[in-house]
Amino acid sequence: MTQIEAARKGIITSEMKEAAVYDNVSPDYLMRMIAEGKAVIPNNVNRKARLVAIGKGLKTKVNASIGTSSDIIDVEAEISKAIAAEEAGADTMMELSVGGDLDSIRKKVLGVTNLSVGSVPLYQAFKEAIEKYHDPNKLTEELLFDVIERQCADGISFMAVHCGINRLTIERLNKQGYRYGGLVSRGGSYMVGWMLKNNKENPLYEKFDKVVEIFRKYDCVLSLGNGLRAGAVHDSLDRAQVQELLINCELANLGQDMGCQMMCEGPGHLPLDDIEANVKLQKRMSADAPFYVLGPLTTDIAAGYDHISAAIGAAEAARYGADLICYVTPAEHLALPNREDVIEGVRAARIAAHVGDMVKLGKKERDMEMSKARRDLRWDDQYNLGLFGEKASEIRSSRSPEEPDTCTMCGSFCALDNVGGYFKGSLEIGPKR
Ligand code: SF4
Image (cartoon, rainbow, N blue to C red; front, side):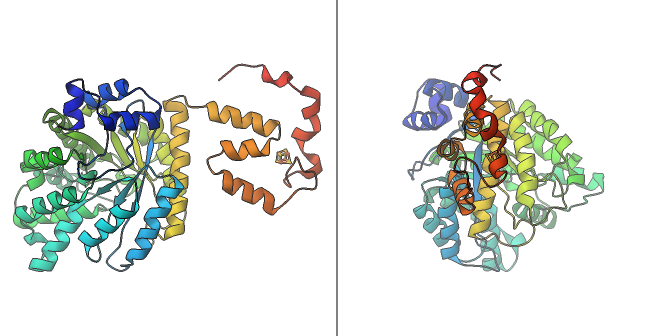
């Protein structure tokens, strides 16, 4: 029985109990959200992972993606990135290798992380079609479904599957007549090419029930991929993207009715003032199915610092209801990320998730405690309360102040040290916000 099937029968599973602890919500609440299709637990009956739930009323979760490219196939480096992402605080991980022996790499990554691991099966399906037939457009339906089942059987807990790209989506793109940033989804672009070349409907759409059956068997989350996501802020919310989102929202509800845990995926690139509309559209059209966004990047001119451009967008998306945000690293648009890029990416996304949750969930207590610790110059408390206490401590002690309570920013001009004594205790009173 899947999590949603159990929840709809009023059963609280051990997976729900475990995930509820992480979010400090009651198992009963989580069960109700899963029953209503508003939350999911990326799970797999074949693999024990550290489970988290994603969805309504829960903390915004952070995903870190790793994986080889066709140019850089260094499995040890990917393993080191997987370990670093978990240590840096990622909640889930996606293994997105496209170079090397994909079955072997996936098993190795699954073996070194406790996190729930996701994938994009189209990568492997098209890669194997190229190896077998020397042409990605010769991919057969049998091979495609075999790869999905193989990845599920190995213990993958959620997969981005591009079911929502269909003939109608391509027609919309053609009629629209522009795409400033082109098609940027690797799986999506291959599937569009396959449909055009073979003049056939997307089998993932046409045989959606078959896809759902595989996911039900392993209790995995079927995450509806955003194959036509905007890859440039000027393509944000264009007709083709909204068409695919609409279909994905329909499929999300259909999959839930069939007993499968469902999630929708979103962009990509969005200017700051389109983010609210995008999130609300997805939530309204899917009856609050969990929403997983990549970034979104809020400007196209920040290469080298795209993790910051994305964190700005992710904070805004989380604020309006996005439930899972995929990190972006400083290497985005430039190169395969290295270990340091992964750490920076996870940290930036964690800040974004927290900033969004301060509004979405009203989670401001820790900030309040930090304010007081700063005011009272309690440095150890500051390190404990901060998201990155070790880094904070490292920076301060690398430039030690002459006055031990202060820091070298102002030194003997420390405003807090100068007047703190006069107001001892009396600054505790005030509106609690
Ligand atoms: S020295 Fe300046 S920056 Fe440092 S704690 Fe005092 S007021 Fe803050």
